[in-house]
View 1: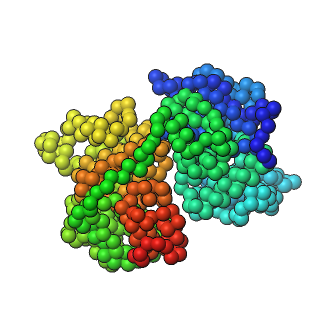
View 2: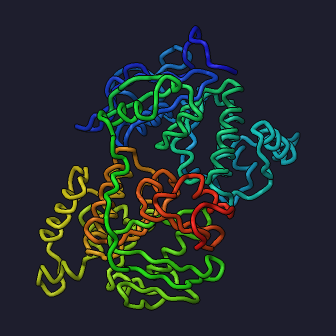
View 3: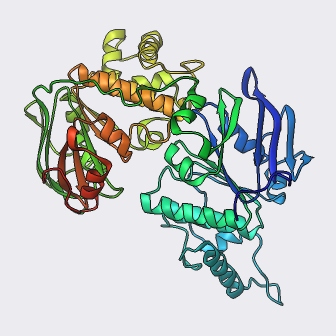
Length: 512
């Protein structure tokens, strides 16, 4: 089905919707129309109001002003059940399936087909699930337990569940954040199938290239206000960035030219059985070295072993010539090593703990020493330190005593960075530093990494974002199936050369 005609009213719409939470205005005068047979993107920085839009469509929030309309008629969703009954389904970044039930049971939970005696007709349920997967063009076993499914397969199950409920509107909230390239391609194929079948799709992603590849129109929000709606064929990525941040973003990758100094981190023939083999590389002071490769190549496993979270089986790690023992994060920290992990929510932060307490976690000894109270920590000292780092990193928060979980993803990432930068490391390992954060905050994180390198810190950056790798790295190390396959100089690094090495094909870089 081609682009929808505008004679029919939108399947689902917000019209001049405003929503506040206390003194915070989340949305103000937002209009958004979703039409049958169209994939419509919603763009904006973290805190722009995208999540509030999703929850308003889903019946979680009710507007303070304006209307939600279905097929042109004003409706008042009393809750998510009303939205589902109107044909609205939301696919979240991390689906919540029942792990011990089968795929088919998850899809038909509470609606299982029954036989003549009232018993669940499992044969009919499996057959209908198979038909749903065939319609979506995916090969999944209806009887397979949900436990162990990849995030991508879980999302497909959620989509099949929505279709089984005759959903006419599918809202995809950051669905590609945790997917590999192949999984993203499959999700896009499924989404196009839904569009051709007449479904209205709302697609939310921080990855601008995905918006232009998949979507026909894009609506932009900034600070909770409606900026505009454009056909994607009529604007460029630069245009969209200007709408999102309200300014030109000339320096998304503000890499400073630095002459590398002495070797700060040296990894020699590091091996961990089943994860990676014979890994050797160096990072010099002032350098940003990127560790690239496909998901599952072993990049994060190398970082965890270097920092001591996981023990290695063979090899050596040296920081400033000091050999580290295997499996000792304490020794790594004492040597001046810091690790910002990939999963900030699970591994980098205590979500229910305050902002100031999270920032202070890595410097408890220092805080006790400065307080001088026999092991007790002064809240004032802790707060002043946290406020200082908040100012340095341009952290946006209401109160330092607020739980870190209330912050946007970008600001949570800044708290993790502040926590580790407060240790004054000589070597900083950052794993996926800008995953899931908006384009404006990405530029700030990139600026910070460049400034840290200019201050003689050695930076090892693990990233799946190829433009980020090419824009920020002095050298690119590429892994494939647990081995280093190439080292590529900044001048020679292209998306093609990095991907060639990441997929095991000969690239332009020298063999590692």
